[in-house]
Length: 297
Image 1 (cartoon, rainbow, N blue to C red):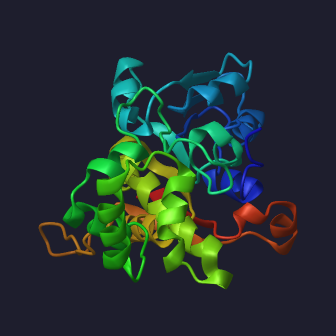
Image 2 (spheres, helix red, strand yellow):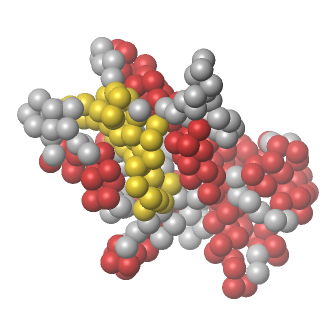
Image 3 (tube, rainbow, N blue to C red):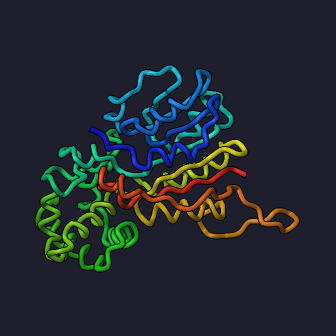
């Protein structure tokens, strides 16, 4: 069972849907956002949805206006070119891992189940969490835990992994948890391991780079007046979205035209949106969600 769609009404309203338009749901999942987009499209509207996880395709909505593509959303432009679609009216991306993936014990995403360290969203790819933990060198692992997990004692964590894997290969979630348990304070155990697993998952799926690819693609494929709607769940994702909307790049560099006038690709729409108290009670996993909306200039 995939999760309840986070910030559903707010996200769909943010798209400001043209009933005859062409829209993209970059992260189909359980189809909740896609279903609501379809509800607001006319018979001539179109929706392209992406999901590289084969399990998501079991949730296919039977609707001729929808094309669900088994692919990473970084290939969005390729598919638009193939379908001879030059511009789209709106793009929605929910960057969160689904409850289905977390709760599925054989995917290795969760600390609650003892299973092989996997964490691949696309199970056709070769690189998984086991490979990273057992083969990456010390410097690279330090960078991953520092940057993607924002773990304070990342050097000690990595040193323990390196010394432990010399004795025995680290294959399962419990293997890793037992090794790193001394670094987790009793009342912060879940938070600590959530950061550890987040860091590994981001590296397995190359999440930061594919988000950058999607945002850059949005600036080239959205029509003038088209909407970009992004839901992020941790500071790394949200920082990318915020900077891209404000500057059109990830370096916080102001760009200008030939006359020296500030040149913006997007215009921010409204303020950052977070879940209501009602939604938090209904779906506790939405607690870290942040929604940003922008319009192509």
